[in-house]
Image (cartoon, rainbow, N blue to C red; front, side, top):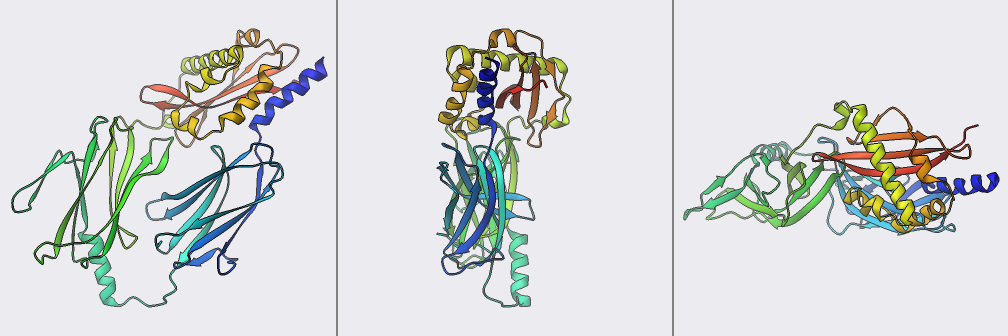
Length: 394
């Protein structure tokens, strides 16, 4: 009986494992690039990912990232996910460059669900080895200096085209559904292509997510060399609290940007002191949700308390399959969770979340580790991730 119990408990650990990424190798349609550098006119880039230890229904997600070293901001260019099987040893992902990308630093990041397994960086470089003249250097400097962005809750334009801002600022309420961005520019050549992006920089959980982007061309009125472009974005529901940024690009290069915040942007929990009473409360709630899940043989009571974005990133079919082992383990879960657990020290994560662990004295000499990762959303601590694992007392 004891051997059977240990075997079943071992199955519980399998939902926590992850396969390995042995290597990532880049190549283009025309040549293999050993030093991970490509000319800007490359049409597509392939990433061959070598995997080890893949099991049935494992998933892989890759993000193609553009890195802005000056602002320390990563922009997601593309995302692809795929379900794997034990026969998968190598898998290839292709990024097709439909729009011209500027020279700079880029990367591919590999995730299994929300766990980052590996990343590899590459560069795009210009094939033209033309030294910039003094004139072009001065023009670039002027372009960066003269572009200005203002944010407001509304705009008015009179008969002469003069724009008046309403509610100008850098902080807005969650219920301010429409926000305007006003870009002032001059001395940019007529018909020069530009693009705008609204980016959610983050709230400690979600990071660097592009909400909306569009493209256009520079135009002036009546031969003027000064222009104004008005953009706006509207959310039908209230905005998520956090830090945002509006970005203005000319020919793919960032010319100007403007940060703004929405709602109650709180300090990261890592800068706060978490009281032991709160730690006990959250562990007790997690144990209650876990017990209800096991009792009903249904994971919904558990993930209904988790963050919506976290639920979307997980393969719940696979999680449910892992929970089958828990449902059928035969352990006296109610008796286990009725005991007073031993709390481990709080772990403060870099994204503002906290990880809590508690050890429950087990029945049949098997202790149970209950783990929950929580993130503060508004005034409420929401479940971010969880684990249930048997511990060997030997």
